Structure formats: C-alpha cells, structure tokens
Amino acid sequence: MGSVAKKGLQKYVSQLQQHPLRTKIITAGVLSGISDVVSQKLTGIQKLQFKRLILKVLFGAVYLGPFGHYLHQILDKIFKGKRDSKTVAKKVVLEQLTASPWNHFVFLVYYGLVIERRPWVHVKAKVKKDFPSVQLTAWMFWPIVGWLNHQYVPLQLRVVFHSLIAFFWGIFLNLRARSLALIKS
Image (cartoon, rainbow, N blue to C red; front, side, top):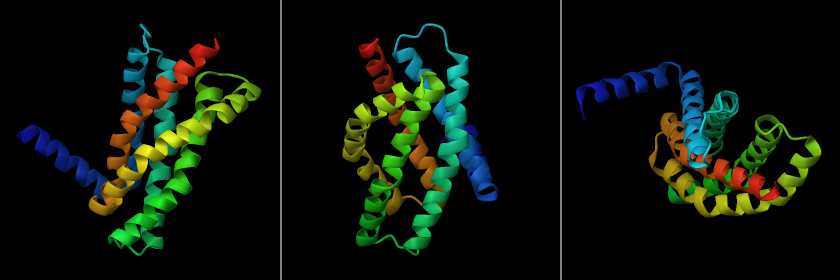
C-alpha cells in the first residue's frame, strides 16, 4: 500500500478508536452522499440535485451512522462478544428480523416524504406496495454480509464495513425507488 494511503488509513483507524461515533457518523454521511451522486448519474439526472444530495448525506449521518454504531454494540453485549458460528447465526437472524426491516421502512418513508416531497398518503401506499419486495430482496443479500461482518470484522470496524456495502445497496435502493416512481408517473 502506498505511503499516503497507508497514512490515511492509520489516521482513519486512529479517529475510529478515539471518536468512534463521530467517525461512523461522518463515514456513513459521506458514503451516503457519494452513493446518491452515483445514483443520480446512473438514473440520467444531468445536473446534480444538491438538495437531494444533502438530504441523503443527512440520512446517512443522522440515522445510519448512529443506528449502526449502537446496533452493533447492543448485539455484542447481548451475545457477550462471541463469534462462534452458532452465535453469529443468532446475531444475523436477530439483525435481519429487526434492524433490516426497520431500516428499509425508514428509508422508503424518508425517500418518499423528504427526498421526493410526496404527501403521506402516497408514501404510505408506496411503502405498502414496495416494502415486501425490497425486504425480500434484502434477505437474499444482507444475511451474507451480516455473517461476514459478525464473523470476521472487529466490532469497531463493523459499521464501516456495513457502510461500504450499504454504499452499493443505497445505489440499488435509489435506482429502484426512482424506477418505481417513473413507472407510476
């Protein structure tokens, strides 16, 4: 690894150790923002929508970063930091039955109300229609990520790992939300 990249990674890990919540908040916000820029470009938006971008950065920083930070701490407390296969399976199941549906519900509501600025009645109908397929798709993908995260990634890096994978998942959700909105238009 180049010396600049190595120093940058060391500095990042140092910040993660000294200020874990702050670092995870910033990381989730930045990755959410970059994910949205990529999503906007992939959906054919020519001129970057800065308001939407800021709202996505806020979603990552205000919600995803802190939620992930505390979720992984709680899971580690519940399961006493164990990482054997049986315990990891329990963590993944618990995460997939609680946090995963909640996160997807919150994202769909936030996207509809805040990003698209649609009235609650339309957002509610869209969530009711789209949530099951989004969640089923998530259950085909995220348990594998959860397994890798809980089995191999140290606690302090789990939110960062999750945020990196969520970068791509965010692109998928944005593309899906946008395509479903275009179909209805």
